[in-house]
Length: 264
Ligand SMILES: NC(=O)c1ccc[n+]([C@@H]2O[C@H](COP(=O)([O-])OP(=O)(O)OC[C@H]3O[C@@H](n4cnc5c(N)ncnc54)[C@H](OP(=O)(O)O)[C@@H]3O)[C@@H](O)[C@H]2O)c1
Image (cartoon, rainbow, N blue to C red):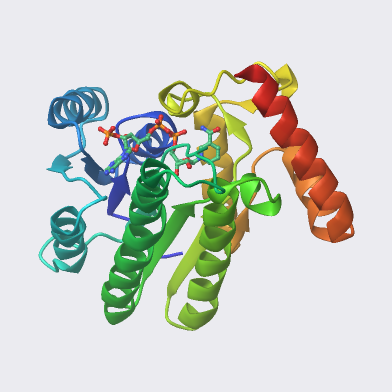
């Protein structure tokens, strides 16, 4: 495996993205952190610099708008200090109705698609192009096991993210660059609180810690895997969700949706 020098992580200030930043810093890699909140970016960067002695660049950008995506794309193309590990991780919970006459619901779906679909294919495509030219590189997208059920627009977006990343990996074969879709289950981060999800219907043993999720993912990347599902319980669930008849998956999806609705 070629040596990794610099990682760029979108959503690198919180939750799973921050765990990626710590994991790379422990491996003495330099970092580029992307998020909207500039003050939090600076705080995260100075903590990492002080603790691990690595270089950390901050790139404040909103991946929901074109200017933000373009700024990150330019950094991925920069050959002076090349990014050789790109993590497309920024995202949020979106549970707005998919059957609606309310324009606000569709605006929320648009925002989710901008950050978790449009920014992902534009940035992963750019990273893949630059890395292939250099002959090596690694790309991880943070998808979700939600993509294996049929619940709402979030599960549809994450089903897309997993398939897109696997497609990217197929197209990158033989180039020295690989792409891996990380599909976590429930992870303790700010994601649920930010999205107004109480999470009370989620059984305790199904929660995972972000640092563990990331270490499992990096082990899968080292094995050259296109798909990473951290945790035995989730690999077991994923196996069944992929092999059960679709009618059974729909019943499970409906049960999950009604449990979730009771939380609200
Ligand atoms: N937590 C879970 O249970 C879970 C499970 C499966 C998959 N995931 C996925 O994991 C990824 C990370 O989520 P998390 O759980 O770590 O959530 P989190 O703790 O809320 O962190 C989200 C990160 O994304 C950044 N971000 C959000 N919107 C952005 C935007 N428009 N532009 C740029 N940065 C943005 C946030 O920073 P700013 O607010 O400063 O921009 C923050 O750094 C998401 O893609 C999520 O769908 C989470």
